[in-house]
Amino acid sequence: MRRMIGLLLAIATLLPIRIGAQEATRVEATGAPPAVLQPGDAVRIVVWRKPELSGEFQIAADGHIGSPFYMEINVAGVPLDEVAELVRSHVSVYQQEPRVFVEPLLQVSVGGEVRNPSLYRLPPETTIAEAVMNAGGPTERGHVTQVVLWRGGQQHTVDLTRPEEGLAGQPIRSGDQIMMPRKVSILRDYIAPFGSIIGAAAAVANIMLRKW
Image (cartoon, rainbow, N blue to C red; front, side, top):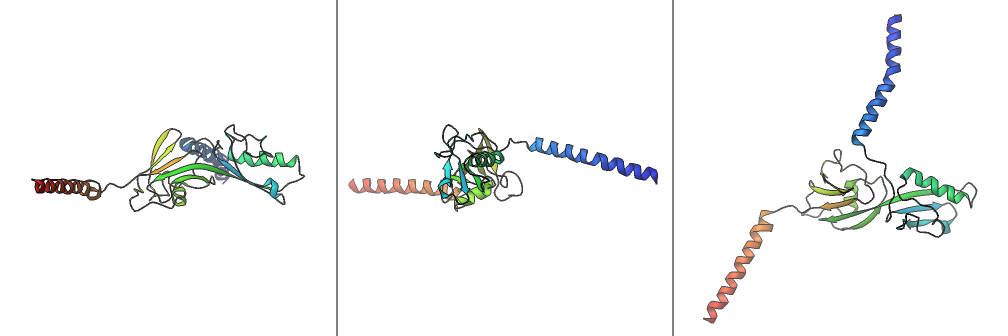
């Protein structure tokens, strides 16, 4: 019995270490740096009972918040969970115990075969699939299993039909470029244009024959 108890205690002692090591390995394997704000992104700030201090403000080219009141705060390259604390600390200088809500908004582009291609500023928890839906979703010609994601100078392929796997269910990053390609159709892309060319040539030939 004593040996059994000792064995259980040893396992209980080692288990957190092993779990921690596995977690570290998992994070390192998936390992992306923490999401940060970049110029072109924005922050939505709400200060309770202070509408003059509230609003949505773009991050300027120099990394500061584009507002006269917040222009001293440089948030470019700052992890998202630290941005709120920087804003609260700044407001605290002018207001005692302020109630401040801060929401980062990351700029991403969604283009190609989507219904509303454009630049968007979206909350950081937005997934790649949700960003596409925010742009109106794919058109009838959209190739949803071969979506192209440009991130950090690298190209990735995203399958929107499997959001539980791969990048489709992963959160966006500042500067992401999402492109929905067009599905290839032999009839539409090859046969129909070739038929049009033949028809046009036949029409020209018919006109020439009439002149002769």
